[in-house]
Amino acid sequence: MFDFLFNPSGRISRKGYAIGFFLPYFVLAMLPGFFLVQTGVMSIIMTIIGLFYFWPALIAVPFKRLHDLGYTGWLHILVIVAIGVLMIFAFSGMFMEIIQDPEGDTATLLAQEGLSGWQMTAVFWGQVLTSAPQRIAFALATILQYGEMIAFLALAGKAGENKYGQDPLVDGMGFAD
Image 1 (cartoon, rainbow, N blue to C red):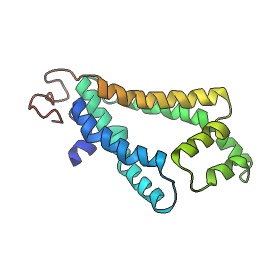
Image 2 (image 1 turned 120 degrees about the vertical axis):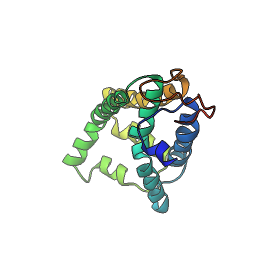
Image 3 (image 1 turned 60 degrees about the horizontal axis):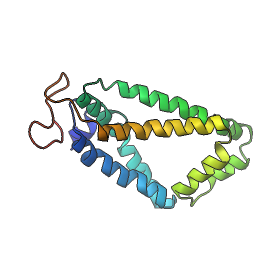
């Protein structure tokens, strides 16, 4: 399992992606962030989970999934850069406001404790992302991130061996090589 999550070489199938990465990622990292209050111990747990999934989510697993589709894993870096640029643009107004007025409304909203993920999303959408271009950039970044994950779940890999390794479906497990 360590090799599956941390080694970017090789291939994984849709089944391997869904069972070995997407479902645990969604259950451990996404659901608690939206439904549980982010204070104290929960914040520490969420930070540890986030740090554990940093390398697998950004590099290792997407690279392997792209390899299974017959593409270089470096294409995923373009997605990361695009999301980063969109998010910087979306939150640039917030950064400037906090720099100009560290005791202002935005800084006070972000410092509130006890907000669930849904409440924090509402705060961002209503108070931080104040212009239509910022909201569009944020929406595009979100669509790009989750669109890639959905594509990885939906697209079948290339049959047979390719330059990235043996077909993960050959041995019957459908997990990884």
